[in-house]
Length: 138
Image (cartoon, rainbow, N blue to C red; front, side, top):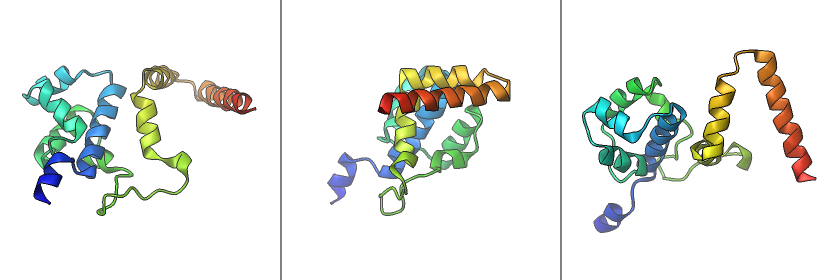
């Protein structure tokens, strides 16, 4: 049993690592830059992001400060203690959001949208995206 746990990372560690990667990418920060800020190598950041290495509490707090999020950000919609993600509608799947925002298109769209300061324009962009998505379904 013990060897199996060594081969397969804990689902919570994988999830937290994915959230670190998501936020780092949203900020356009490299693994190297995050590692430098923490005084560790980018390889260590890779291991954290894959869930291969568990992030300690003090290190996670430092990462949260560098990435300008509360520590709780890394656990939002995390899998339960049983390792199973408890979710309602498939559309609300946090893994879908993480996958999308980790993609090149998702990052570009997110960064461009964040630069729009006018709330009316932001709503129009959302309306446009919904119309385009509906057209594609038909």
